[in-house]
Image (tube, rainbow over all chains, first blue to last red):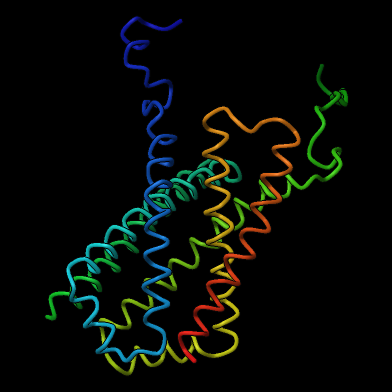
Length: 123
Length: 132
């Protein structure tokens, strides 16, 4: 039994439709060039001093690239860990674990973004 | 009803009943590498944060990374990253509805495994070449 409106909205019982599936793919596609960028960035900064690293992050393309990388990686991470939690954790612990998962991703992103912006703006 | 033991009902076969196969192992490896990468993200953020704080803190993290144990962790992280990335590309092929023939599946998982090892070695050869 589904109402016509429910069918049109297509959000299903979880009320989020295919958003999880779709964003998992969108971030996965974004992650491919961003991983290549990050690997290149790390390799080209092996053995540099802190000041040399900061000088690189001052470049807007590097700073924006790093911000995009962490945003996409951590969004993807949150979706993936959510599936793992939903598979293995049940009951009220599941709710706590899902909440902790979201906080984990957001805290990591805020920390990374703060570090990148601080180095880039040189404050 | 009360007092009587519940009858042992037949259960559907679970994982241990099947012969372990490469595609099955690679499926669980995709999940394991994903979780490992999540832990690795803490390390990446730690590295950037240290760089943004002070010379002393940055040197502490760099010291850990250049230690043999840090290098081992970083090597494992590189492999997990390459494995998960190639695994993701394999899933994209399957998302288009292609590559489900048994032979193709076998070929894809083998390419995934060999490719991840080769890419990891390539990255580390370049990394050590840059340092030398």
